[in-house]
Length: 356
Ligand code: NAD
Ligand code: TDX
Image (cartoon, rainbow, N blue to C red; front, side):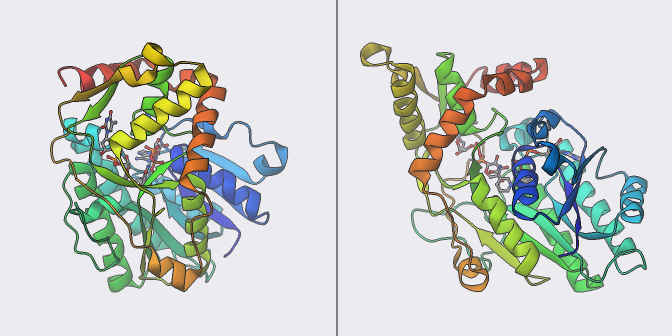
């Protein structure tokens, strides 16, 4: 791995955790973070890096669709790779307004691939180069009660979000096969941890519990997700970046399948202990079953055998411990929570949950 890495979407949840992790565990890497700062991007996520890490970090406010800007970044930095996180990432928003998902996830990824193709292999780009596209298990669609997603599972996306991620994955594969661009794809399960925007299940529930607001569980609450602590996802990405083979896909998952209702009940228990609530004051009273998400995938579960066997990665955190650390992080970082809950955020919450 050469020294300069371009990270797109590094002001978001996983991207900011990734930058923090990389700067800590790879002291010879320098990171350029390109982020458009949409509602989900927040430079405050990386405000407290400290002088040692901050010296190797540069932020550029810009759009992955801005071809001239990407060309300039290539010409100014001897990039050893791109880790591409930038995306519209929330399924419910993709149902309300799919166009932004096509724009960023499909067109944005396409433009980044084109810029990489143009610049990779030129004199100003070193021989070692990797394009790592960060994707999702949602491209595989829904499982029944048995089986797992492997790298060979056929794509079958259900939501505009997962359809846009599937389309971008196909472009990445095409750029490897057609142009030889040394690209790889990771398809990961649901992440949780610090700095996740509170529109997603776990932070939304933690914050609603604190504020004694309703806890909206879609449908019967028995949909299953496979949860992975965000730092473990970041370590897997570093592994793939350094040791993965161009043209390959790697599935990443935590092996921690839980029904949504189990997650919500667990969060109620953890929060009740911390907030001293019990009996008829317990947070369980806030649980409300609401109208289901249209096209709601029933179950996701990742078979991570390939990355385990070929690259030696496995999750480093147990779900039970990491979820407690996550709960504590939100309780101790209410200043961050308040800073991300803008007027736009409140408008989204009102729109999405009205009439459910
Ligand atoms: P996020 O929504 O928290 O962050 C996305 C970031 O991308 C934000 O900082 C945003 O400002 C930036 N961005 C959006 N459009 C941009 C554009 N046109 N140009 C530049 N920057 C732009 O998302 P996340 O949860 O951190 O997910 C990151 C990536 O990982 C996404 O590609 C997502 O599909 C994938 N992923 C997420 C999960 C998960 O559980 N969150 C699981 C698997 C894969
Ligand atoms: O209020 C809610 N109530 C509820 O029951 C919300 C926000 C969600 N849910 C359910 C829907 C899902 O079954 O909880 C589950 C998790 O929902 P999200 O947090 O929205 O995540 P999901 O739809 O599974 O997608 C996430 O994982 C894969 C990320 O948002 C994607 O970016 C990633 O690709």
